Length: 306
Ligand SMILES: Nc1ncnc2c1ncn2[C@@H]1O[C@H](COP(=O)(O)OP(=O)(O)O)[C@@H](O)[C@H]1O
Ligand SMILES: [Mg+2]
Image 1 (cartoon, rainbow, N blue to C red):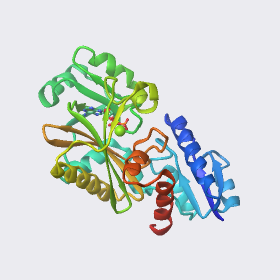
Image 2: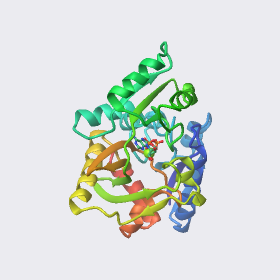
Image 3: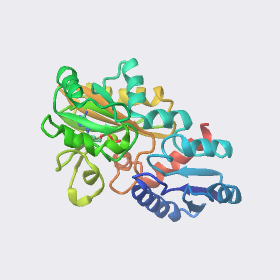
Image 4: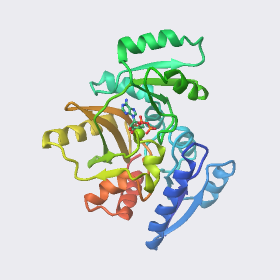
């Protein structure tokens, strides 16, 4: 029996999502009687429990801060245990929307133009609005640099800009991005393979937290995506390029806007969701890869690639 330690919960805003993911993953893995599973939280006694359980593999199902940002990965590295998904460097780069955008830009991957805004310095809102008018134009999207699940993401116009901005004060540093209209498409990579893409049509104003996780918010998931084969290949190739540039491992999901025949990469997620409403499992299903096969593939990848 393979001993698998499942890491879930944690301290980020996405704690609940991680626990839902763990529940569905455990439900699937239990059907297959070859695993001995232990679910634990990355709390103070985590290392002690890990050493006692001696897993063959840690399946990291954490999201956000401490789970997706290189922190837990470095603890796992120092424990010399194999773990799923990306390593320390990739996780820290991908969670940082500013650093990863800089890498994308350097490598000719289109991403929405942005301004970094810091609440740490003397804030000059008038000047910021001037800069937006000159370089980005309203509406803009405000977002924290290292959150996920659309937490703290606001689309705002000039009129409600200051009100929006103040809502993000606790994040210290944020990005102000040019708003890209058009379609929302996401692409998944698994190991060395392009897994496929999915389009999202939120009924809400945009793909916010509710649109992502509440079935009643009724975001429409579209597969296959209506794209020319040229564009289909293009988005998959950009996702693969980003995955490789950030040196990701296992599965990743890149979020795009598609506007006027151009793909804008918003971000790459190294720990994409695995709940029943999540996108990577749905993309896999379309390729006839069941949920359990997907998880087993992620685990297999983690044991062979280090
Ligand atoms: N520049 C943008 N233009 C248009 N919509 C955006 C932009 N940035 C973010 N969004 C919307 O907000 C959602 C969340 O933003 P994203 O950058 O992917 O952060 P998160 O890590 O919270 O998922 C996106 O899926 C998209 O619907
Ligand atoms: Mg996203």
